[in-house]
Structure formats: C-alpha cells, structure tokens
Amino acid sequence: MRIVLTGGGTGGHIYPAVAIGKQMQQDNPDTQLLYIGTNKGMESRIVPGQGIPFEAIEITGFRRKLSLDNVKTVLRFLKGVRRSKALLRKFKPDVVVGTGGYVCGPVVYAAAKLGIPTLVHEQNAIPGLTNQFLSRYASTIGVSFKQSEKLFPKAKKTLYTGNPCATNVLRATAGKGSASLGIPPRSRFVLVVGGSRGAKALNESMVEMAPQLGQIPDVYFVFVTGDSYYASTSSRIEEASPGGVANVKLVPYLNNMAEVLMDATIVVSRSGASSLAEMTALGLPSILIPSPNVTNNHQEANARSLVDAGAAEMILEKDLTGSALLNRIQKLLRDDKLMKQMAEASKTFAMPNSATIIASELKRLQARK
Image 1 (cartoon, one colour):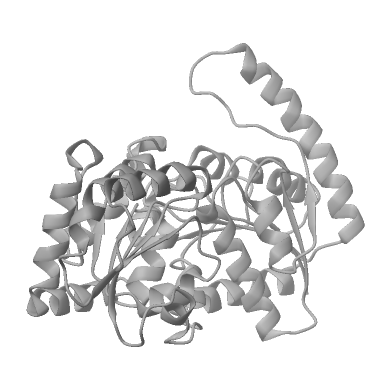
Image 2 (spheres, rainbow, N blue to C red):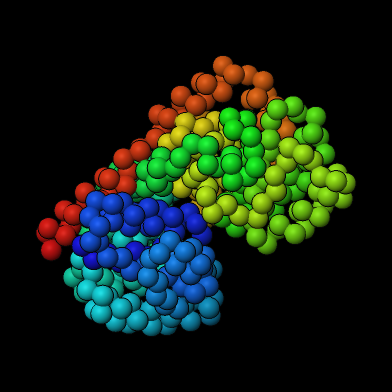
C-alpha cells in the first residue's frame, strides 16, 4: 500500500501520523510512505528522523478575527492545494491520512478532489478548525474520545479509534528509559514535561521546586524543558541550587519518550491527547496542567475526562506554583493505594489496539477504491 501522511505544527499532530505509518509498515513491510508537512513545523525535523520521506508545502492557519492575513491564507491554501495535487499525482497513494494542523487542509482537500480515499484523525475531545472543515470531504473521521463522534455532523463516517500513540508506546522496552537518563534500575521517578515545545509555566514551577527536591529520598525528577527554554531554566536552577540537585535530571527534549514513560512512576504534563493516550496505555497516574492557549480550551476538556474518572489530578495554569505542584506530587508518592487506584482508572481509557483499528480502516478504504 502507498500512503501519504500529513499533520503538523506540534508533536501532538505528528506522532499519531508516524504511529499509523509504522503500524502499516509492520502489517506489510512493502508499505511505502510519504509525509507532507511544512518546513516551519516540527515535522520537518521529526519525520526525516523517523526514516520517512518528507515533502513540504507552504501554508498558514486562519486567524479567528477578520484580518487581511486571512486573504493571504486563502491564497496560500489554493497554492498549497495545487502543490499537494502535484505531489499526490506523482506518488499515487492508495490513501491519505491527516492528523490535524493547518497543513492537513490543502493536502486532504486535494486528495478528496482527486478521488483518493482519505482518513482524518482527531486527537482531541473538541475538534480543531481544520478537521471540522475537512470532515465534509474525508472518507472517514477517526476520533480519540467516544464523545467526539457526535461533533462531526457532516462526516460521511465517524469511527471511534482511540489515539495510535497508545499502540506505539507499548512497544517500548522497560528499563531503557531509566538507563538513558542515568537513573538506577527500578528507581521511582517523576517525569515533568511541557509538551513537545516545552511550557514556560511548568518550567517556572521546576525552578521553584528544584532546591527542595534533594530532600525527597529515593525519588528522581526528570524535567523536560523544551529546546527554547533549556538554557534559561538550567541556569536558574543552578543559581538557586549551586552545584545542582543530585536527583534532578534536566533535559531539553526526549527522543525516546516512549521508553521514559514506560519506566516513569508519575507524569506531570500538559493534557494534549497524544500524551494522554500514551499515559493511559501504560496506566500511569498523572497530574495534568492544561494549556490555556489552545483552540476551544480543548486541553482542559481532555484533562477533565480523566480527572472525573479518578485517573488524574489537575491544576489549572492560573493556580500553578512550584509549591502547589510539589504538594500534589508528594501526596501521591506517599499514598500507594491512591496511586494504584489512579493507575487502574487510567487503564480504563486505554485503547492499545488503536493503530490496528486505524490500519484496518485504511485497508477497507483501499479495497473500496
């Protein structure tokens, strides 16, 4: 099968597409992939690193307010459609898969106009603008949350698939994540991560907490700052704790996130859908800090679905401080019973066969072609 993948901007859109591609290659090693993204998005770095051929188009997102920039965006969209059609005619895919982000718009739209079967996957509880627009053209809409099925009234077919990142994370090998960070085997550690780009608010909390963490015995803390925040966060922690804190590991980014998650005890994280899929697949207790800077506040909706089931705790960013976060972490670390209950509740959200469900749908779409 020949498959075009598209999705971009953040890891939350990119990694599900990569997971789908990898599942298809696992099912059939002859599967050929092409990823279409933008040169400005993280996909231009992540996708080639995964060994997947990459092509770029130029496109920007719409502003929600009336703006001259939106006129320029329409022109870029039309140009992107023409470029996408040229790439699709050359590659001749059997199916096209879009996983969100504005780059999906011209690619999936072009595929639909060329009569190529398409699947659009929505990761979040509340759909993004691009996926809502594409729902009237796509052959199938896949959703990560059951309650999202009804939010695509114009879709030809809606399918509850879960998030394919859940399948991918279960392929990790226990022990490798700890070893890569220099953490002794079977040690407890708390992973604090602000998403693929990092999060300023979480980094501020890391700086505030760091001097106190040396007083917590037998627990390590892994802080993932994001590339752009690493230097400033590192220097501020060094200033607050000269010589460093022995049980704190500070890194800008994790290329082996699945392996690290496999070994983690607690995760403190934003509540992007792909991250939640990975955490629930592993049954990890979590403390979620939804980003308030996303469309329709969808991260809070994502988080509340887990909080209401007892699978996670939540701190809104407006209430986030280093001391508030540290108190929540210590509360969990001291309560094995609560941690176990949260782990069991987390697993009820897991769909470890998500990538397989999507792969089956792609094969069905190919057969109908």
